[in-house]
Length: 178
Image (cartoon, rainbow, N blue to C red; front, side, top):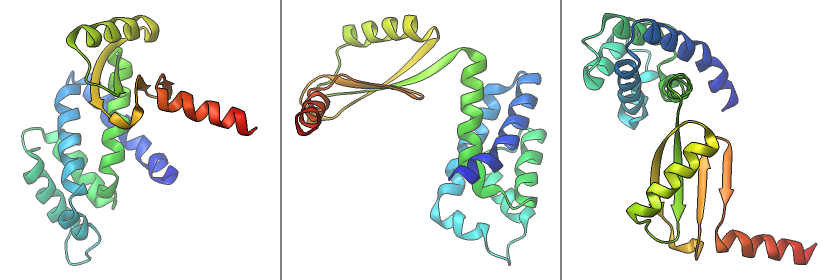
């Protein structure tokens, strides 16, 4: 896993630098995400290692499905990945590109998993508090997990805040056994 991240990094940075210079971060982000979804499909993934399918053919196929035909540089980027046998890295490249884009735009995706559905007022409070704490514009994504019993888990990149009853009970149990 670490190896694919290492190999994908220069491609993601090159795509980001070009997209930023062309003021096309959104368009490139969408292309990379759609292309990543395409190569994740098991039917397409089976074609990636097939010696009977040329790099150009698979790149054109991915571009056709992903809808990347309008940007010449984007087409060339996907073709370069195919030529170098790196199309399978598109999910990692897209993820790293998204992180670089978020950093440049001063945004952060935050996931909140709570025991109960958040009200609009709760969502607004979390957004304001996290914006202050992280000093970035927050894009909040919420979901519900009833097994948490109560409270919520907040994830923003490497930051994880566990304020759940389940987490507290687990920590209490660990403390008692030590």
